[in-house]
Image 1 (cartoon, rainbow, N blue to C red):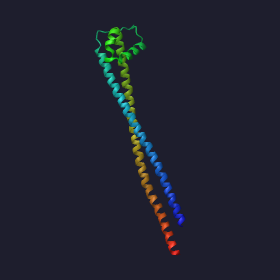
Image 2 (cartoon, rainbow, N blue to C red; image 1 turned 90 degrees about the horizontal axis):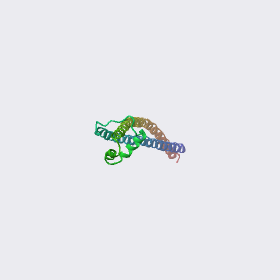
Image 3 (cartoon, rainbow, N blue to C red; image 1 turned 180 degrees about the vertical axis):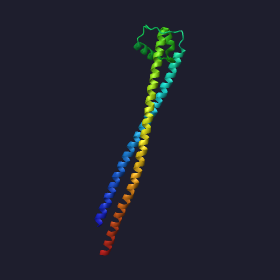
Image 4 (cartoon, rainbow, N blue to C red; image 1 turned 90 degrees about the vertical axis):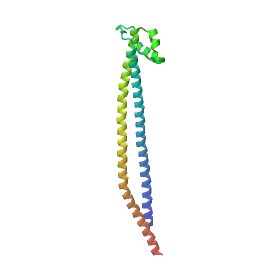
Amino acid sequence: LHADGQKRFGTFLQTAEKDIKLAYDAEETRWRRVCDSAKAKVRSSQRYEQSVADLAKAEERLHSMPEETEEKKDSDLSSGMSKALGNMFSILPGGGEEAMSKMLKPGQRLAIVRRNHEEALARVVKDNQTCELRKSLTAECVDSYTKTANDSCEKFLSEEKEVWSAAKASFVTIFKSFQLFEESR
C-alpha cells in the first residue's frame, strides 16, 4: 500500500513537472512572436514616416522648379540615366539642385525631379501598405496570444481540481499506510 501511494505521488510530480515545462516553453514562443511582430510593426512605421518625409522633399523640389521649364518629349536622357543622375544628385547637399542647374538643361532637371517624385510617391504607397499589413498582423498576434493565455488559464484551473484530487488520494493512501503500520506494531 505504501509503495502504491509513493508511486502515485511520484507519477503525479513527474507529470506536473513535464506539463509546467511544456506550458513555459509554449508561453515563451508565443511571447517571442508577439515581440517580433511588434518590432516589425515599429520598423515598418518608421520606414513609412521616412518615405513620407522623402515625398515631401520631392514635392518641394518639384514645386521649386521654374514653371516655364518644359520637358522635351525627345529628351536626350534615357530613363535609366535620368534615374541614375537623380540618385547621384540626391546625395549632394541640398538635393544637388545647384549641381543639376550647372550640369543639366532645365528640361532634363525637370525630368529627374519628376521621376524622383514618382518614385517617392510609389514608396509611400508601398510602405503604407506594408505598415497597415504589419499593424493587422500584430493585432492578430496579440489577439491569438491573449486567447491562448486565457484558454491556458481555464485549462489549468480545471486541471488543478484533478491534481488536488490525485494528491488527496495519494495522501490518503500514505496515511492509511501509516495507520496499518501503526496497527501492525
